[in-house]
Image 1: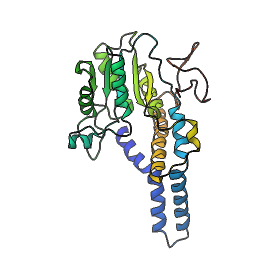
Image 2: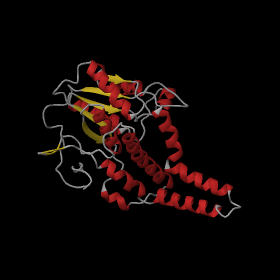
Image 3: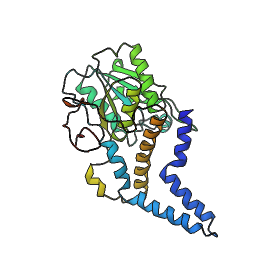
Length: 292
């Protein structure tokens, strides 16, 4: 129920849809006194969300929240966990070809780390999250892509049932536990988009599965982009939609008990940030400074 409700509500509530509805509704009411107000508000929001740095301001705190783990510190990783969302399986299945999207770095960095740590397992979690248009699971495409890029099939662990981030954590934990790969001393590193890392870490913590972050797919350079406008309205709107979806997701996960924290942060020990390769410092909202 949560999965379907989240899909429907997000379609209606995402900023780009709301802005369009404001303009459409204002056009319908063009002969009333309210028409100007709806259209004016819609146009102003369209320009602000589409051209201003608002999208960067919304996504930057998410990207900066978790630093990358220090992989040079022993022990070597037992395995890397990569979350689905990097491929359009609907197109890939039809075309019988890899179809990486904006989050393609999830797969690219997985292969890079697999080569650097040849003994580590590669655990992929991702099913079919389609509602109106269904395809095979993301795990099918990921397995084919990873093996074609040189990852040995016997290193792969595939979980093909998860449709959202919380299910990624719960289902994958069950799979790894069944394989005896969650014993004390095992070290698992989580690979996902930087802006998605807070919700992903919250989900794995809630599932009782301690992982270390390896954020990828950064959309901003850092604080320098807080003053950088967009040159295409569509790009600015997309950035606002992506960032808002994560903020709404964090709130929804917290309210429904899928997360213990509204805005999860790295854990802090007497030595500083747990697993962090970078020193304690800014941003002030986070105990750790991101790699930048």
